[in-house]
Image 1 (cartoon, rainbow, N blue to C red):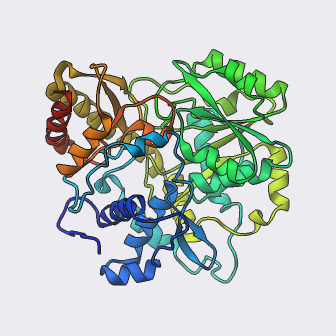
Image 2: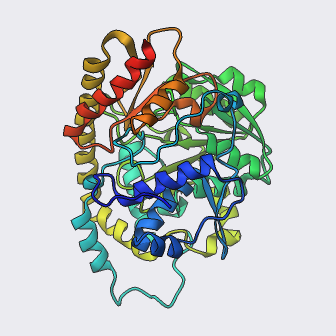
Image 3: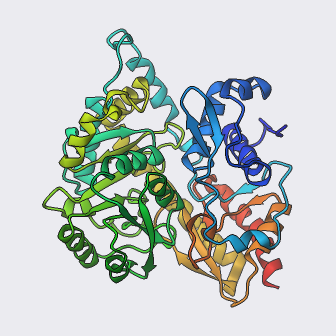
Length: 460
């Protein structure tokens, strides 16, 4: 049984998600079936929506997979040991009580969601004008695709129209669709190292030969890419995951020229582009591709709006769209009709643009508060590796020797959840990912002070 406390500031769906994740890591094996959403909701006296949100987050991070008409199972995607020796060291203490402070690096505070506006629009859009007797557009509602295309063109310089946009059920869904559409043309897949571990697991599962490509101080190393013979490459050029480096425009053009020369494909994950606090992000790679044939653009509403609504999108080259329209994937909607219509209205009426501005200002303040708190409580024992975008600041110790796993263990004992780069990214790059998005502004200093006690214990 999990201990869930409705009196905590941490939302119940986050408490449930973390409890299940800990159990998956410590007890479950690949292929184990999870209880159904209905059963879990009944057992813990939760709403179905709360349980769905927890399962959706586990699915998004690759801990579980969904099987049609069967349920949810522990996924092999998580058990990707880039660094298997990590598991042979000290075992972090299992947290049996709810965490006091959670530094999850990709989390928004529940109060930051525009709930009143969303509920009003959802109620308005749920009316008799909708055809509840028919299947929705498999590509996504046209009104939503038009709004996404308009937004991307204006904010990111993406060259697209609504017919190129596919509404997806988040990142994994979108990547799986690209893998399916491209496998008749391509066989070799390159990915960043360190980088987001889910990407190469998806393409490997679809039969691609996957190769890690080293990341340098200006992003993906092009000479390594050329040597790899990869035809498809997945990159996060705006804010590289997890190092935070930005690929400069000159290197983007060189990468694009190489991919065009081999008739390959770049999968551009525009990670964190909406949450840049110091500078405007460099225009998208997709917008630089004058041929329109060599970049697939991947985006999501998870970081700036909500991970719980499970809405992402793809902008695909026309040759991929031609294959898509002939496939079974084109026939069934990937996101509920009501969610799509609500989001379309949210964007069309200007709420999305206002929300983005408000979210950017709020998280810029949180970013600054986190930065100042780290300096105040850690002093000269650390250095900031990555800052200025996203929902986390990455830090490393100044000391040459540092026991990262011991830090996690001490933090667990203090009921503080921390997250290390190498756990999800592989390679040799290691840093603590100090997420600030899930805190209220006034909570950050206290949370960092508690973390500093753990940090100083390891430093000494």
